[in-house]
Image (tube, rainbow, N blue to C red; front, side, top):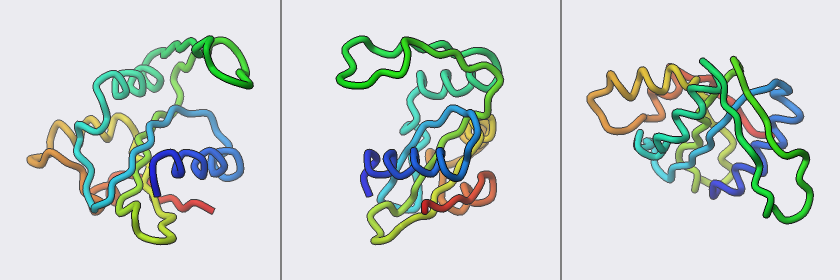
Amino acid sequence: MLEDQFQTRFNAWLKHVWKRTGAFELKVSPVDYLSFSAVKDHQEAALYNAHNGTCVYKLPDDTAGYKPFDAFSLAGVEAWVAVMFRCRDRGRKVFYMIAIDDWIKQRNKSARKSLTEEIARKIGLTCELA
């Protein structure tokens, strides 16, 4: 499963299962680990601000088709890195949601340069696509 396919299915999962406000950065990995550098500095900062401060974002005007509104502000919401490991495994549905504060803590304390699926299972929420 590619990230855009994960995104489509994840959006449906948010609407029908999660049903809560939040900020999410999705990542896929073909193996059982994901480099911490896969979440870029600006993405981590935006997630951190959405949870611990305020994140304001203006949607681009050049967006083709339906644009729901011009901008949004997220303050004090749950913020997550959602990771699907072994994304090329046929029928893979399991993914992990790691709270941004836990992601940062793990990145800072880890001797590794990557998050393993085993650690994600311990520090995150185990979720499954429909």
